[in-house]
Length: 308
Image (cartoon, rainbow, N blue to C red; front, side, top):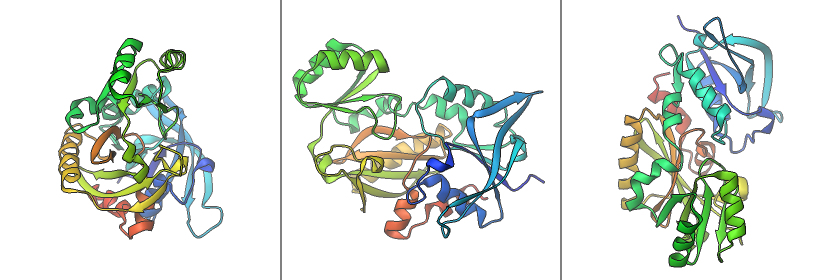
């Protein structure tokens, strides 16, 4: 019998915000079914004698306490002893990230890993959306400054994003063409994403939650005054919303594709009924916020879909 253990590969729990964090919300839900939570950082993964070992700690989450978690004991654990492993660390998508997916690839037939390590390596969170450009604002992916210049001339107001970043970091709104800034940006990030600016972002974006190929719910996040960033980590305010028929139709189509790619849990974003090109597959967030706004508990849905 496989141990009732869920391992979470994530960032330092001291840095997590229990009010909004989805990893805690998922862990707290499965604890109710007497699963133990083992928590480790990707840098603490090793392969020793053909076994995948993580140095981490058993942990218990509790929303009632001021200190929302308690470390029960530190341990080295062979990860095939777990029933599930959740990959929940933040990008950036770098070599450490890629190496951790290769290590977990070696045990994915012995333990259920979510999302599948091969799949999150293959489904680039920004570049994957290139296949859905008919549903997006005008967008290019390039590291050629002349392409960006031409694009800027057409649209006059452009969003510049790194392809492998996260949480609204390093995003620029270009009101004028600044070749020095763009050259520096390309040098730092290589390929970048340029997108026509949608002024209706001031009314908020929509984050849609996809679990096991199904569209399960959504929230909106309204940027704080004077900002164009809809990330809650950047001060955006969440509100409850419904999807339009068009948004639901596009989300269903992407959900179906992601299921074929072996992506179990994802978050996709819309601005002004257009897909903004962020297909979050590493560590999608927002489930706790949805629950606080609507009472809908998608952590429960997540584990039911896994039949945990």
